[in-house]
Amino acid sequence: MTWLLVPVAFVVGMNLWYLAEYLLHRFAMHELKGKGMMSSQHLTHHVTAGWFFDYHHVLSWVGVGLVGGAVWFPLGWWLAGPWVGLALSLGWALGYASYEWTHAMCHLRAPKNRYQRWVRRHHFHHHFGHPMSNQGVTVGWWDQLFGTSELPRTVKIPRRLAQGLPWLLDEDGNLKPEFAEDYELVGSVGIDDRQREIDRVRAFASQAPTD
Ligand SMILES: [Zn+2]
Ligand SMILES: [Zn+2]
Image (cartoon, rainbow, N blue to C red; front, top):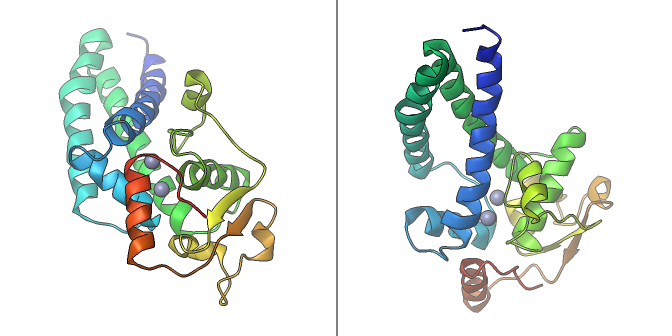
């Protein structure tokens, strides 16, 4: 075995996660329209667009760890030895960690560089513009490959849902001027039970929220 295979296996492991991220998000979350815990949990995230930690993240980590330990580690070992197995499964786990971190930061913190700016616009167009586009969160190349990539010049966000993105707004609830190039707030800030129910039904049908 050549040692060069170890970093290669690590990068392959990360990309296996990014492919899984795309496929799970598109097929196990959006296409299932709320059937099963993974889908209903994700579509509930679409209803308010807020992010907070809960026990589902722990369950996800357990699932990712099981796949890494029971599939990628033995497969890599079988193909090219234990270090390749370890690198493949660690790449997979690090890919997942980068997804969880990136997704949380999209919702909670303002962008600080070109990648962070892109990843927010890309993900928020998925939330508010077209939920069947941009199924990859961390990277865009699987959407390019599967023809689901979309990025309008400005991403429109209903005012009532912008509350889920605190970094976007000033104290008066208006769009901060530094983000005016990338985002536009539409509709009113008020929300009642009827609107909440409309938002829920549309999120579970993978339709964009109305203004
Ligand atoms: Zn999100
Ligand atoms: Zn989604």
